[in-house]
Image 1 (tube, rainbow, N blue to C red):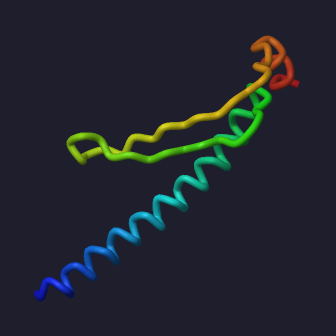
Image 2 (cartoon, helix red, strand yellow):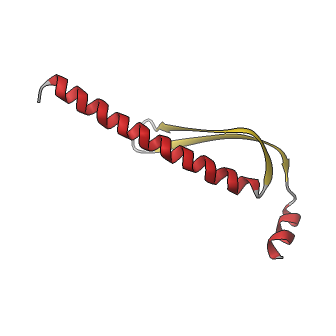
Image 3 (cartoon, rainbow, N blue to C red):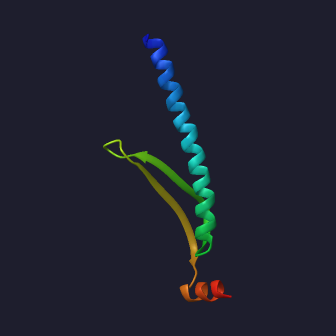
Length: 82
């Protein structure tokens, strides 16, 4: 396989992985926002960054968000029972 074709294939596959990971991160943001909103008042934007570990075997997700109020666990239990 020529270097040009090999490089094009590599770029295509990397692009597909990036598009796929972008979709995964968008879905994670939506799901995490819904879940965390049950426990706290979120403020601002949520950021999720995906990275590869040093061995290249695992994807590490870093989640960053802000909340200005964390709900009392007792209140959560009372509302979920009703």
